Length: 244
Length: 163
Image 1 (cartoon, chains in turn red, blue):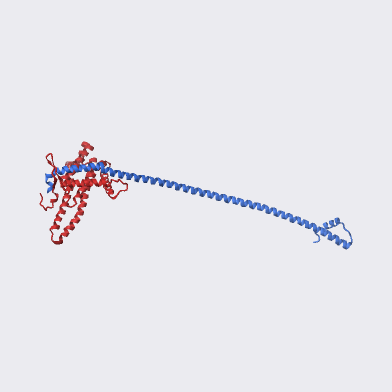
Image 2 (cartoon, rainbow over the protein chains, first blue to last red):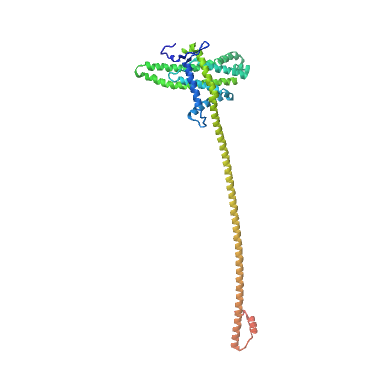
């Protein structure tokens, strides 16, 4: 347990209602609540703004369409025509991470993307899915993914283990990137928030100004990390189709 | 670090699975097809408008071509008409001129004939007068009665010698 005024206090999980299922603790927590809010915001926004289905879109409908086109463009740029069938998944992933990060930017709201277990689960789904996809597309030939053509033969004993390790570390890098960004940003905000309170007289204005600027940066990072998560997923899907 | 406390790992994974699955299925089945239909509808509308614009442009070009053809045709026709008119006018003028010439020639020749006739008449009169005067003069001077025939003969023989 972190101390009462520790910058890490914000990451603590508090159960809202205790639920147990088959001996496992599946309590509905503040993290689950943030996920619920995220899912509600995404589904309601994407449903209500497009409810009129007008050819000339309203501003809100335009936002939904822009998001749709953004991810569709991303997929077609990286994967090509094969990517269309993964569009719902990549779009859900992008929106979930993006809105999850954004919900976390609301003061006193929990940021579930700052928990390694959540980001790792998402990355693991991507990793396992992409690996299965690779085997479906190429069968046993998928292992040639670790074999780099056009390299002197004596380099292979060195390169193949490197390739295998880099492949296996994909879910770790994917999840830790998002988790660490969120953790660092929110911790930094909290540290400076502590300065605002603890500094004498009006000098607290300076860390406050820094917090304002940092909030802007954090919103950018929230978007950027969602984008990175989505684009890496696209690249991994592409690798499952085109080995090298 | 609360993130590494495994107490709530199962809870986190459980609710993540629930919410993310719901989100995925909902977006896949409801939201995204809706947006897709809107985008498709718009694209169709744009394509339709573009193709109809193209069609209209083609029609406009055809009409313009027709207009140009008509203008050219009209120009040619007008030129032809003008030529015809000029030709017929020229013909008319020349025929009128020639008939006028004929008329004038006829009038001139008529006048000439008249002049000749009146000259003859005058000459005859002068002859008669000469005969009469000669008769009278000869009668007065010589008391010789000359017949007209004799006088005529004398005058005929001396005609032209008196000037």
